[in-house]
Amino acid sequence: MVRSLLANVWDGVNEMIDDTQHENLYGSYEWKHPTQVAGVPWKNPVATASGTFQYAAVRWFYDVSQLGAVTTKGVSPVPWEGNPGIRTAEGPSSNINAVGLQNPGVDHYLEDDLPKLKAINATVIANVAGHCDDDYVEVVSKLNDSPADMLEINVSCPNVSAGGMSVGTDPVALSRLITRLRKLTDKKMIVKLTPNVTDITVIARAVADAGADALSLINTLRGMRIDVNTRRPILKMNTGGLSGPAVLPVAVRMVWEVAQAVKLPILGMGGVAKGEDAAQLLLAGASAVAVGTACFDDPYAPIKVRDGLASLAERQGLSKVSDFTGSVVPW
Image (cartoon, rainbow, N blue to C red; front, side):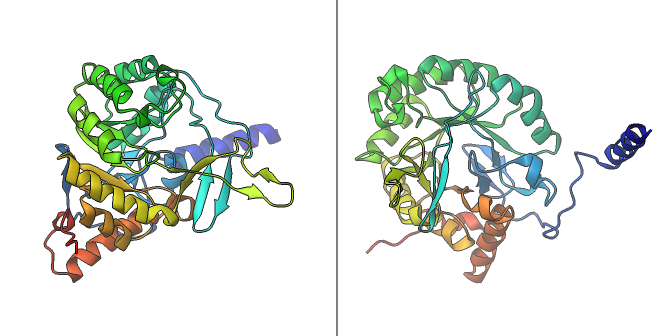
């Protein structure tokens, strides 16, 4: 009887919940500062960064479709379990992770995650991960006919086609991969660049020549933390990807360098936590920005960055946020 009663209560709760309805607890949103990235319309120039945003959790706080775009966690051909724990640790103004791109695979993504986001009219960037070139080919082929608005190719994974190194550090291997993927899809393709290289402009030029429509940067910096008492690395994988406010100056510098080297739109990311951070990346040459690690601390972070960026533009007398882009005045 108790079980039956609980079942009835649960059915009643389900009837009251409409997955497509969202109560915006942060306040109403007036549509301002629309933009385009590689020809794809965005409601505003602020997106989420891959691997830092979970729709199932955030949807209870605000209407996710208010964001310029939602970049989903990297998807692979088959489910990936990720790395063994401990997988994350905090650092000075930063976070370091070695999660290992854990995900349920592209088929689950197409059946579950992507339809839920498109049902609320979100602009979706599907992030693609792989351990070899054929992995990328399989995922991009499956996503080509999907409702995803754009693809983001994460080339920072260890890649057996590149001798076990990140394909994103080798301009020749990367050019070969992007050229191959370009033939498989008409979707706008963003290539996510690693900062763990000597000269990021060499990588950017290789990607541009191979047919990318846009670039996103920076991915995480390689870092390490050690427990001084045990003398062991805190992360089970020894090293991990460093992100958070500490990396913002590196991101700004690299966006500035890449913007001068190629003419592709840039999605700037790395340490963005407020409107002024986003403005720095735009001034350096980015067309839009993505908020990542800040979402772990505050699920409203992308909304606050969006509104802060708009307020800053208005205070400076700009008619649109895009007027920031590329307007830095170097000494």
